[in-house]
Length: 303
Ligand code: DON
Image 1 (cartoon, rainbow, N blue to C red):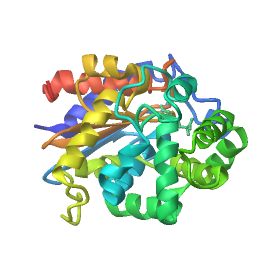
Image 2 (image 1 turned 90 degrees about the horizontal axis):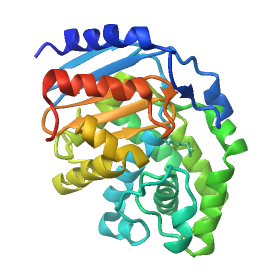
Image 3 (image 1 turned 180 degrees about the vertical axis):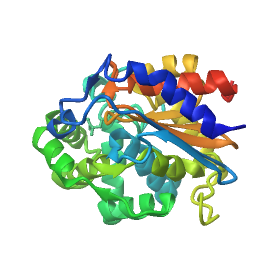
Image 4 (image 1 turned 90 degrees about the vertical axis):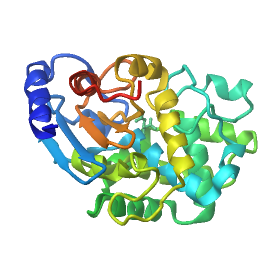
């Protein structure tokens, strides 16, 4: 399949819609300054072929896509014990919702909503320097040095009142071991990692290779762990739009409010799309359309 021409076609099809609909995330002030009219797409196949088009080498804030890598570290380090404090069900609620946490006694529904990722990060903070480990993992997975955007991290720390509330609420149930400020510092930094589409298409490669590192061939996760992450991405990776994503795209996906979405075609390839204007569920509007075009044109879907 000529993936390069396909991605160029998708960019050409969607370019007229750039900047037309949706809103750039503005609850994190540093993200509100990102121009809306950007679109990039990249993929990397299991046998190492790459294709990319549009703004595919422009770095953006990975935001909740980091939850995927935090979960990867958590599963690798803790195995089954990770699930003592985190569920595996879709929430059906916005990513920053507090409502279920009270009735479910401080146990977040899944590792991809904010509360769940904060709970995973707490476990990581108990084990090692979670910020440094995240950069080491991301850099190794994409084969290039990855850094945090300190301005974005500081901006979120200054305005992240809901996350502060979520972390304190879980702490009140005895579900957070470390100082809330240390856990949130790591969580905000993870979200502020700056990467581009091509780097993310490479970095997620272990998910289409049964857990094998895309460059070193080292088994990063077991086959079963990689399969489970894909399952969680399908059911929970795009929050209360996960049903719509499964219906329209049919691939495990993980989105972030920076406008990025990564997607996995098991045993074939991983891809990343980026366009900063979001819909009301916090998912990239053109990113979703691009993935829909990709699966329609290629027939690559898990269904
Ligand atoms: O914690 C937050 O609200 C952001 N750092 C990340 C949220 C996010 O990306 C949700 N994704 N769609």
